[in-house]
Every structure is written in C-alpha cells, then in structure tokens.
Image (cartoon, rainbow, N blue to C red; front, side, top):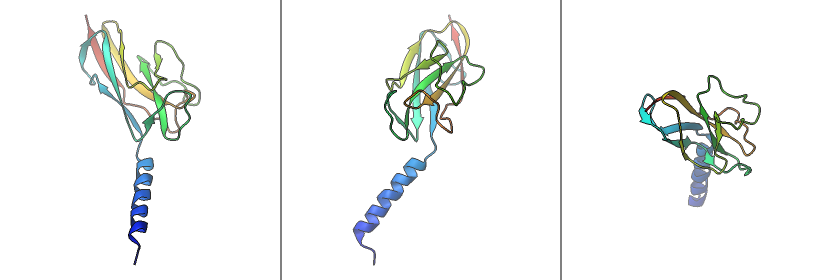
Length: 135
C-alpha cells in the first residue's frame, strides 16, 4: 500500500511538472484586434505559462515584455531585442502601458525577452493585433 504522504508528494511534483511544461504564450488583452481607438492608447499585456521578472533578473521560466509597434518582421531572435520607438522595452516587469500613436492603422505585438533582452527559444510572443487610431 502506498503511503498517503508519498501520494501527496507525487501529486505535487506532477502538478509542478505540468505547470512547467505548459505552453508559454504572450497575448494582448486590450485593445482587441480590429478595434478603433483614440490616442493615447492603453495596451494591456497577458502572459500564460511563464512569469514576469524585471530585466537583469535571471529566473527560469520568466521574462519581460517588449512591445513591437508597426513592424513588418520580427527582430533577430538570436540577439537582444533593439530599443527604439518600434521596440519598446518593459524591463521593470510592467504589464500595461499607454502610448501615443498617430491616426491610422497600427500593428502591435508582444515578444518576451529574458534577463538580457534576448527572445526565448522557442520565442514567446503574441499574435499581431491591428488597430485603427482615429483623430
């Protein structure tokens, strides 16, 4: 007969394994794909299967968000993510921001970076969201 504590311990460790094996996914909570908004635009970030940690903090299964604005293609996935108006870093572990965007169509996408701003392997990113900013 199996001891109850062994059963409890096995269940606990299997649960931890399932959590660590869970798919990692970044997503934009809002605005929704296709939404029409006014500037400034508040963008809320979501993350599933991983944790948020500030830049410089090396912890397994964590990273911090980078917001990609109006990019036709992803940055190099084997180098640190650039920092400019189209690659906005949230190294403090932020999960929300407000940005000024000119009227017109814009794309938004999240890319999770590690403690040194490098994309994970495989990359943890959101689907691209297209919004329209009206005057």
